[in-house]
Image 1 (cartoon, rainbow, N blue to C red):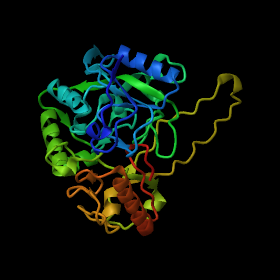
Image 2 (tube, rainbow, N blue to C red):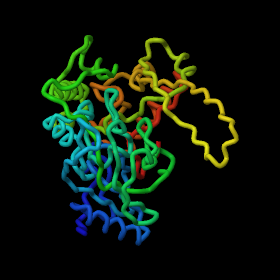
Image 3 (cartoon, rainbow, N blue to C red):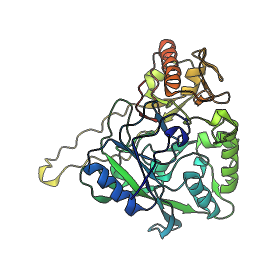
Image 4 (cartoon, rainbow, N blue to C red):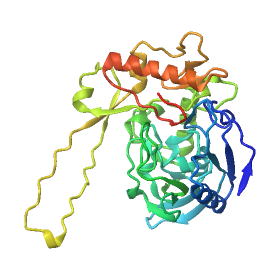
Length: 378
């Protein structure tokens, strides 16, 4: 295990906040990572793991515990049990966008719409990362993880991760602890093999982002290029010369609300239906079956609502700043809170609370932060 001189977290996170922690370890292999975690857990230290630092909002006070940097990399191609598909086992510390670039080069479809998302592969299942109607749960087969409660390494199928909209059983939700405390070591995806023509684009959000109106195939490289251009125009591609990219991406989640709640919002508010699980099965043990099959419960439709629209229509425009604050809304995207130059975590938190209050006052909805918060509260 490689213990290093602690580095200020402001240098390792895209929001650029946070002092140096008490202790820092580097793990460049899965074996070192497992040993480091077991050692930290045996000491009952406060701890967290750090990948790309793009979904982390760290407070100004030094973290009184151990930070473990996951630096593992590597992609292994495996056969798939399904015809016309291939599997990739990827180490947790591998850069996510480098993985997407690899799949496009290898003509493996399924994650190309998530081009340009910062961070590491191991973080992707934790929040069921997604963009433009594509989510990792659509291709995720399993993860290899180490469980804090037992210290054991296990392979866990995707079906046991509780994957939902930007969530899983592994995620630290604001104000609560994860259902299962564990660290992902590797991720296995099952992707479709395509030819030079690419794939047909069917999802509404992706078709709109790509400007597609008719039918037809689109090469994966074209999808990736257009998504990268779209993200760059919104300040969502990391660029040290552009302060709009000194952010954690979308700071607030789009809201999932009942259809009846969405109906009360102005009609121009963008919204997308959330498809219910129509394949859900009721399992009745044979020994207890008495001939009665309970009726299928009525599934109330839910709707995803644009948080960016709510923010802008609560009177907070792109580029907004509170007086004398070095934190501000991106000039390109209303969902991104940015560090405009040496802003403290306190300044960013003040801006976030102000946005929440304005949206709640105007629409009665409470925006929830998407990044993991460490040593800071909203």
